Amino acid sequence: MKTKIFDYIGISAAVLCLIHCILFPLIMIIPLGISHNPFIDLAFLIIGTIMVFRITKKSIQPG
Image 1 (cartoon, helix red, strand yellow):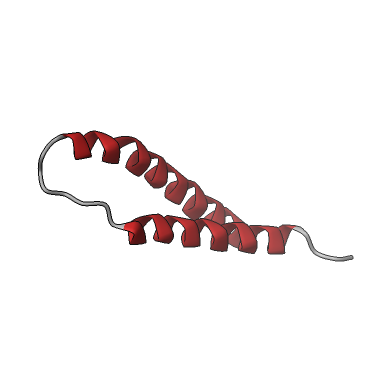
Image 2 (image 1 turned 90 degrees about the vertical axis):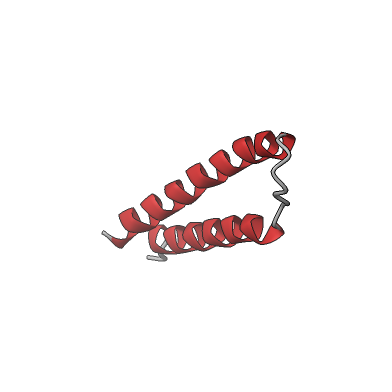
Protein backbone atom coordinates (compact mmCIF):
# COMPACT_ATOMS: atom_id res chain seq x y z
CA MET A 1 0.00 0.00 0.00
CA LYS A 2 2.81 2.44 0.85
CA THR A 3 4.48 1.67 -2.46
CA LYS A 4 1.41 3.00 -4.30
CA ILE A 5 1.63 6.23 -2.34
CA PHE A 6 5.31 6.58 -3.25
CA ASP A 7 4.40 5.86 -6.88
CA TYR A 8 1.78 8.61 -6.86
CA ILE A 9 4.18 11.09 -5.25
CA GLY A 10 6.88 10.24 -7.79
CA ILE A 11 4.50 10.51 -10.74
CA SER A 12 3.15 13.82 -9.44
CA ALA A 13 6.66 15.22 -9.02
CA ALA A 14 7.59 14.09 -12.54
CA VAL A 15 4.49 15.72 -14.05
CA LEU A 16 5.12 18.97 -12.16
CA CYS A 17 8.75 18.89 -13.30
CA LEU A 18 7.63 18.39 -16.91
CA ILE A 19 5.22 21.30 -16.69
CA HIS A 20 7.92 23.45 -15.11
CA CYS A 21 10.46 22.55 -17.79
CA ILE A 22 8.01 23.27 -20.62
CA LEU A 23 6.38 26.43 -19.31
CA PHE A 24 9.33 28.18 -17.65
CA PRO A 25 11.21 28.94 -20.90
CA LEU A 26 7.98 30.28 -22.40
CA ILE A 27 7.39 32.49 -19.36
CA MET A 28 10.96 33.80 -19.59
CA ILE A 29 10.22 35.15 -23.08
CA ILE A 30 7.59 37.48 -21.62
CA PRO A 31 9.31 40.33 -19.75
CA LEU A 32 7.74 39.86 -16.29
CA GLY A 33 10.92 40.16 -14.26
CA ILE A 34 10.85 36.49 -13.22
CA SER A 35 14.22 34.85 -12.70
CA HIS A 36 15.13 31.18 -12.49
CA ASN A 37 15.42 29.65 -9.04
CA PRO A 38 17.70 26.57 -9.08
CA PHE A 39 16.23 25.36 -5.78
CA ILE A 40 13.05 24.36 -7.62
CA ASP A 41 15.09 22.04 -9.86
CA LEU A 42 16.90 20.70 -6.80
CA ALA A 43 13.58 20.02 -5.06
CA PHE A 44 12.32 17.99 -8.03
CA LEU A 45 15.59 16.04 -8.07
CA ILE A 46 15.48 15.28 -4.35
CA ILE A 47 11.80 14.23 -4.38
CA GLY A 48 12.35 11.96 -7.37
CA THR A 49 15.49 10.39 -5.90
CA ILE A 50 13.82 9.68 -2.55
CA MET A 51 10.78 8.11 -4.22
CA VAL A 52 12.89 5.89 -6.48
CA PHE A 53 15.03 4.80 -3.53
CA ARG A 54 12.02 3.94 -1.35
CA ILE A 55 10.16 2.10 -4.10
CA THR A 56 13.19 0.00 -5.08
CA LYS A 57 13.98 -0.65 -1.44
CA LYS A 58 10.44 -2.06 -0.91
CA SER A 59 10.36 -3.94 -4.23
CA ILE A 60 13.78 -5.61 -4.11
CA GLN A 61 14.05 -7.51 -0.88
CA PRO A 62 16.50 -10.39 -0.32
CA GLY A 63 14.98 -13.71 0.16
